[in-house]
Image 1 (cartoon, rainbow, N blue to C red):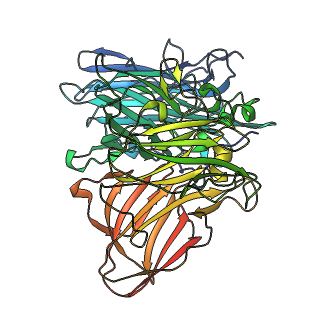
Image 2: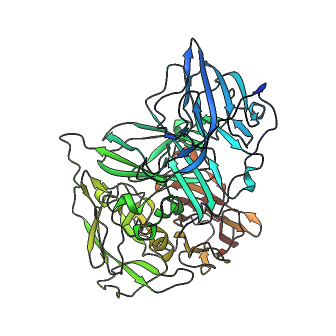
Image 3: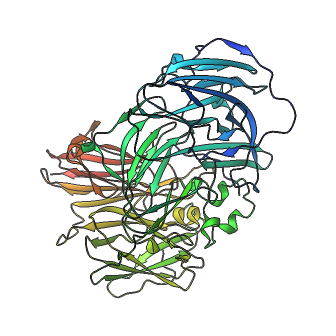
Length: 623
């Protein structure tokens, strides 16, 4: 099976300004049938030569063969930038200068058949008039002051109508970093690149971080207590919800490729998943406090499964593999965190024990196979053939160590990721990766058990989901909600409401995917409320793709709610404010709001795919 790189929200159109950026002259295009080979740029070495206060850089845009799955893997022909006299790279050469630097860049378009529109080579923030337009064989030189410190993107748009083609060519783009005077703390630059090509066998896709696809991406290393800073740049037309396992991060700056702004410290929220629109950047900071193997990856299932590989001939078998180098691919980075010598990371306290059973059933709705995670309740073990539309909600208490014994009664393996929970690596749920060194957690094979040890340091809204055979198991129902309460708090479903958004079935048929909320595609029973009483709404998106838009209306007027938390972490005080009751929830995100209807009447809570029409509704009757 070969899957195109689609997502429901669609690609973002590319705007190209038709203004020349400098005088151009003709150069001869490269000749010969043999293309140069791209090298994977790890963004450690700035390009160009600094002469006094001026960076001099000579860029060449050309076609080259890219091997995102290692030097011995398959190749795909792409457009790529390189420095004059050097081989081209994906992503493009890193431009990194201190504020106040003058930059002189020459760009040669050696593509014999395509116009190139170069965006991002100008004083930052960049203006539309800074766009360069090079016909095949043209070259031009521009000189400009670097501009405002921040994380930016420069890129080439290939052709005059890039949105009309059935492929993606986002490989000719790279980071442009302007450091403040005095320099920046140590960091790493991570650029997402995508290329796809349609041939007689279907789509061939290449997705990469710094030029490589998992498992060939760089393994990042750290030690407990390190301060880690990343500049993450989405160099593609796709929206990528980027998820960090096991830890929270803060975002110090955001950018849209051509401009950048800092986020004040008192407005920096904690995140485990950050949605990154096309061309956007995020400056991320985090500090690991537990050792082990962890992941940073896109949470669009279609961007991390074996079918995303160029070489996907064995993909369907690899979905079930317990080897993490086989059951994942694409936009995934591995992080190995070493312990500090002499420090113990063992849990303390007597754990509570829950039992969770993984079951499998026949076709349900649009899913060819159904799956469930079902809790043992009141001492009763669920039947082996029991299935339900979503996994049992798990209600636990902050600070109470909890062991969850997972028993596999299905016909295939599984592995559960406790999304957003700060826990030990062994229990994180990535078969063949979670753990440390060579001691890595196995998949839960049919008939076997696995005990996940949760530490639960904070109250909030989380989720759990399969991390094996992701596409089939997620759309088949192997997902669930986790609510962590404060000590002494009792869960009250009349005032505390969980809305877990997911799919039933896959796109690829005339009907498309079906949006489900808590297992229902149409709506929930009406809910009675009392005016002046505060309710907590917990929203979760664990579909394989597509953001979900939730909103509350009274007639046609948007209601008001108060923001409370994101990804299970309470928001900073300055962000806990009243706002219109509308929220777009990306895949892998959770949001909490407090809703206090002031007056009696009838309200409607609805859910929709992105900007589409609502397909799910619930009446809220306030007396």
